[in-house]
Picture 1 (cartoon, helix red, strand yellow):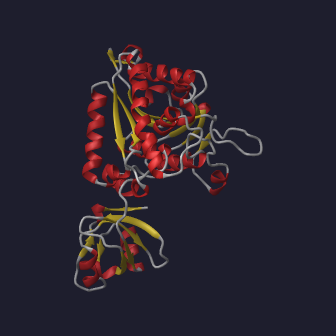
Picture 2 (tube, helix red, strand yellow):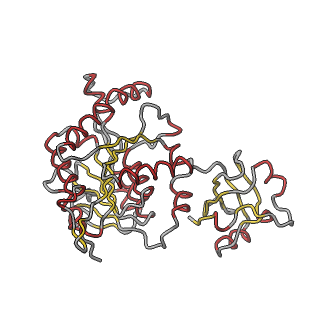
Picture 3 (spheres, helix red, strand yellow):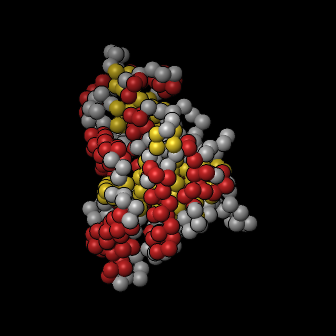
Length: 362
């Protein structure tokens, strides 16, 4: 398999807070991103200049707020983090607007929480807004809305958010810029160049971050890579401090850092990808072995196969489906509330609990 720069037309780039503290690194990355967006330096196909589409997921709001306040360590209280983000977010966007304006590129701020992905209507609104901005040649800059996020609606880190955004916009590649070259073998510090499956061995190579201004680390990057891989999107972890890091990532993805290859499974429709990666299940339905086999063979879930349920879900909610060993093997959009399903579960009368078109196997 050989991929070249021309294969990637829609690119999601994530820049972490640890890189933003180095002005030279940021200037280099901004210059490289501008070259992709600017049609003067872009590919020419059939005599028509092709504009690349770039979406930037940027950390740094809390770090900027900490700098303004003179804090040396990251606050631990939620309200302090929210206040620091409130101070720092405008500072962060002002910086991006100033640096990208030198290349005649307009920046657009988009702040998201998990609720924007969990609610299908809000999810599609965010997708449409980003698409319009890209059509206008603008650069969407996305961050978590830290000023209002609480534990129930937080992504927890922008690595996870970047993978969700890549899934949202159906990106051709996700590039996560880090301050290390990629996933390293702990004994030799050798870079693992290609990963086609995240195994327990690969997970043991990851470590969490202990930096004062950031959260996450390689563990969160592996989690993001897993989402990208299962969304059929290649993910690349690259050292953002290197000269021409972005060009190298696109022209030589197998040598730039650690490349996580897309899953070999068939590509899912966009709506079913939303079922798996974005919608938070509102409950759980347990089924017998007959129903499980029927679902695995592409049939709908009927009431007779339901043996139990958990949660207070309503008609139209996304629920998990588990087998007799409590193993979750599918998700789907349910046609009954929990209260109504309790009345008909296990009954012989044919009642379609989840239609096969609204169900996806995990």
